[in-house]
Image 1 (cartoon, helix red, strand yellow):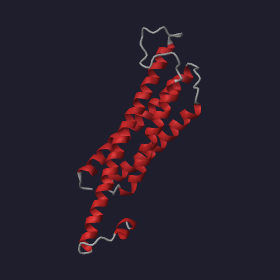
Image 2 (tube, rainbow, N blue to C red):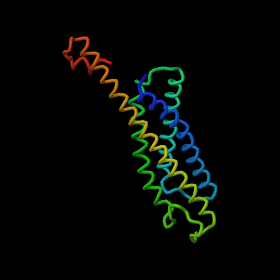
Image 3 (cartoon, helix red, strand yellow):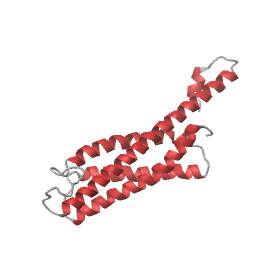
Length: 181
């Protein structure tokens, strides 16, 4: 992993891991605050899916970071990194649409001069906004990580093709290239 793509992939993973933890904590904070003020979440299953995906992402990202610290190859994790990233981006879109409907009638940016029914709704609205922003920051980090991972895989495939051409005196053996690791 001596290329610029591997460096960027390592950097993005090291950024994504703490962002994943922060996003999980903010989601937990939202749940606690909603519960404290007896505000019912309209889609509790969506919140559980958020925590499940967040928890799995933390575990997987932690495993990848551990492998990086031990200087192990990340090639076996590339597919997982891409899958988690893609799942998180899709989930962020669904979560945003459904969560937007949760605070019906309240503007997204929670202006302080808006006539809220209850004073606590301003606080709840801000927590919801912070949660959505952190969700999308993680989504952007995930997208960049997925792009770096795909570029790294492309580079690996190119090096395999070049190696195969060298071993076969310029003649490619395409079947061997893509079936052997």
